[in-house]
Amino acid sequence: MTGAAAIGIQRFLVIYLLLLVVLALMKRSKISQTKLLLTASLRMTVQLVIAGFLLTYIFENPHPLFTAAYLFAMMGFAVHRVLSKNRDLNTGFKISIGLSLSFSGLAVLVYFVAAVVNQSLFNPQYVIPLSGMIFGNAMTGVSLGVKSFRENTASAKERMEALLNFGVSPKNILLPFVNQALETAILPTLNSMVGMGIVSLPGMMTGQILSGTLPTTAILYQISIMVAICTVVCLSVFGSLHFGYHTLYNKRSQFCRLGGLLTGTGCGDEKSGAGTGREK
Amino acid sequence: MTEALRISSLAFMDTIFYPDMEVQPGEIVFLLGASGSGKSSLLRLINGTISPSGGSVFYNGKDILDYDPLHLRSEIILVGQSAYLFPGTVRENFLQYHQYRESVPPDEETMGACLAACRVPFSPDMSCDTLSGGEKQRVFLSVALSFRPKVFLLDEPTSALDRPTAEELMKNLTEYCRSGKIAAVIVSHDRHLIDMFADRTLDLGGAAS
Image (cartoon, rainbow over the protein chains, first blue to last red):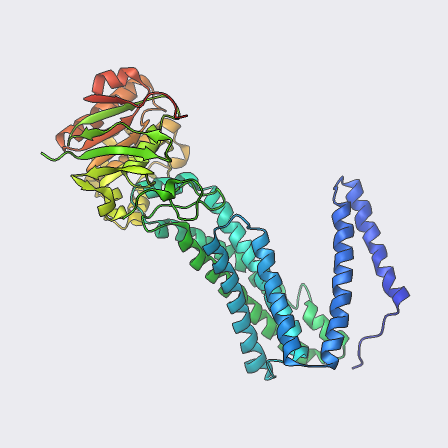
């Protein structure tokens, strides 16, 4: 096995020509996202170039602080991305998402690096790429889970109101939506596991094979990372929604607003004024 | 005798201020008022699904804040304007609602009696997916009735019904409430029904400013 063939800058630039095909098809289909295509391509290029230089520096000058800083930056970005799409969630729900995503990611990463790969927790060569995959997938899973939960509760206002009026606890009302959202969030990961090796050779394995790793070693890494991704998605979505949904009702079993999706009034951090009513 | 319900200096969001009132067990009170006058909100304040900004609601002489909210709502049942039924048959709806509430579902006889009282003319094995708006409303009311409420709060229960069916339904419901000493507070815009069945009316007037 040999390492990946080096690509010269001129040859590398040829790949951008493919974007002209995308651009042409978008124009023909009247998809007015040309600006997004250009911005996305530019951002991806700049971000990856910076990451490349940064990683080169960190690998040449390994220090636990650098590894930890990179790791926390990724973690912070993942949490920020999820929360930026859900700005109107209450503070408690946001904290649930932030903590669940961070702790699930860290726990799975530590288990993977220490127990499976048997490397130092500060070895940048392992910790940084693995945490990228772990936090990236957790971020997508939590985004999908929260989106599904919000959409499903929004479209079930009548059902939720009827159940609440009949004396059903908010917990019993919301739990089916939590379970449904968890299923929605983990299904893409499970489906990709089903097709893996047949429909596609995944990115990590492809990268390892291109860089000269034996395919038999590459598959062990790939299987391990897929199991880790499945676990982190499940854990982070479960934690975000299970801790989060408790923030949607108060001790009088009244619903609070979830970005205007739930109909009730009466929780502490609302502006409606209803929650400022007398309580015992 | 202690009144079933009493509201005192009640206000919602400091924009709607309700007149004080009492409802005796077995009494049928109709609420009137323009849209936005706070009729539906009053029903929700009484069963505690929203909180007032001032004043109190008393149930059997005790402030509702002294009750466990779920216990309160298991006795003061509110049937809202929109009738929600789960996909499936009428029987499955009874089972599902009771399962959610963790209560014992009604036996066949009780289920039949509730359906008959609400003028539901078909079998419990009928699918709810094909029911008309009025039929859904009556099945929904039957389910509410099967919870054996102590106070019944009904928000426009006949809005989707024709006049004869509405009259029959209200006749059965009011008889059921009077004989069982169940206090009922009913929102309705139908003057005819109000004249026929109200023991008392409470006019909340125009919309809140």
